[in-house]
Length: 557
Image (cartoon, rainbow, N blue to C red; front, side):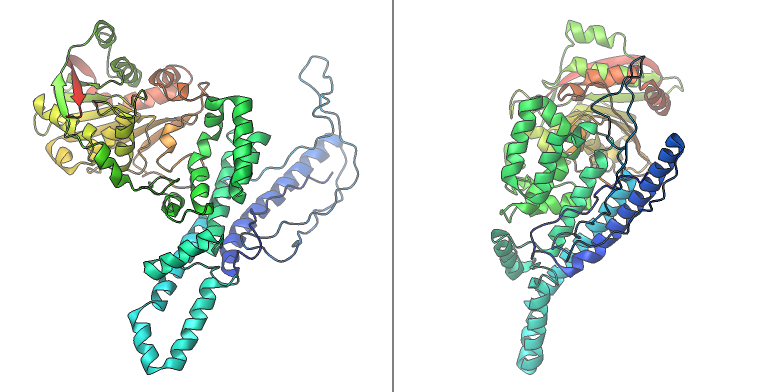
C-alpha cells in the first residue's frame, strides 16, 4: 500500500514578485523537507505491510515541477495518483471494536519532522537576511559619491554599472525590487511596499515564518485545526481580509481567550507576517528583528519606537516599607526555600505595588537575601506603581525602568550590605525586572547576584552582567506572555547553554489562567514535581532559617 502523499511545498506568492536568488536558500529547505516526507512514506508503507500481510509494489513516483517557479517559493509538486485500494476499517475504542465511521477509509497521515522544518526555516531566514543586506549594499553603491566621480571619468562604464545594478535590484530574476538603506533606498522600498512589489528577501522570510508555524503545529494540535489553519494560511498569503474572516470565525467558535491561546505559540510569527506583507513601510523592522531572533523595539502595527515609552513611564521610582495584611502574613508564615513556596508568596503579594525582601540565615552560616517581584496589574494602562501595562512594555524593551529604579532604592534602603549574595525571583513583569536588575552593571558590581528565577516571563533577549549568575526560566507553553520576546515554541533561536529553561504543557490551557502564579505552582507541585526538585537543588545554598520578611510598596514617584 503506497503511503499517502503530503504536499509540503513552500508557500507561494503572486507571480512576478519573486526572484531566482530566492531559490537557492529555499531549495535547501525544501530538500530537507522532501527527504523527511520520503522517509515518512517508507515508514508508513512498512507498517501497512506488517498489518495486512501484503507487500507494496508501488514505489513513490518522482516529484515533478508543476511549472515555472513562482516569486515567493517553489512550485507545488505533482504527485502520482494513488492506486485504488480498499482501506481497512478503523476500530473504535469501545469493547466491541466497532468501526468509527469518521475514521473509516481515512489513510494515516504522513508528517514532516518538526526539527527538519525548523532547520529549513533557519536556512531560509539566513538567506533572506543575506539577500536584504546584499540589496542594501548594492543600493548604497548606486547612490555613492564614488560612483558619481567615476561617472565623470568613465561615463560609459558608469552607465553600464548603473544599468546592471538597477536590473539586479528590480528584476524578478534578481533581488526582486529589493532596494533598501539610505535615503534613496528607503524611498524605493516605500514605493515598492505601496505598489505591492515583494523583494526576494521578503519572499524567503515569509516562507521561513510559514515553516515555523507548520513545525509547532505538531505539538499544538489546536493550531492544526481547520479554523486555525485557515487563519495562518491567510496570513502567509498576505490576504488580510480572509485573515480577518478566519479570526472572526475562530473567535466565534472558541471565544476570545481560547482563540488567543490557540494562536499564542505563533503570535510573534503572525505579527511579523503582518508587518512584512502590509502596505505600511515603517513597521517592517519588527518583522526582520523577529526573523533574526532579536527582541523587537517597535510595534508590529504602526512601527512606533519603544523610546516613546520613556514619556509614558518617566518615574524615578520609590520604595516604602509596608506591613503584611493577614492573608499575606499567613502565607509567609509557611514559606521556605522552595520554588512552589516562592511562587505562592508572589501570588499572595498581588500586583498592586508590593514586593518582598527576605533575609535568610543559611545552613552554611552565611546571610543571603531573596527579592520577590510580582507581575503586572491589567486593570489600568498606567497607575501609580511600576506594576502596570506601561511598565510591562517598558520592562520588555529596556533594562532601566521605573520598576528597576525602585527596586535598587529598596535594596539600599533595606541596608543589604555590599557583596551580599542575592537571589531575584519574579513572575511575568517581575521576572523581566529580575533580569533587568541582574543586567545592571551597578547592581551586579555592588551585590553578588547568584540566581535569577523567572516564572512565565519573556526574558530570552536579556543577559545578566555577571556570567556566573544562574538563570532559571519556568515556562508554561500555553502561556502567551513568555513568547512576546520573539522566542516562542516555533522559534529556532536558543538560549545560552548555562541557562536552565524548564517548559511544559499543562491543563491550564486558556489565558490568563495559564499565566497565573497559581497555575505554575499547581503544576510544579503536581505533574512537574521533577522540575520542582531540580530548581530546589539549584538554589540549595539558600536553605536555612528565615529571619526577616519585609514587604515594600513601590511607587513610580
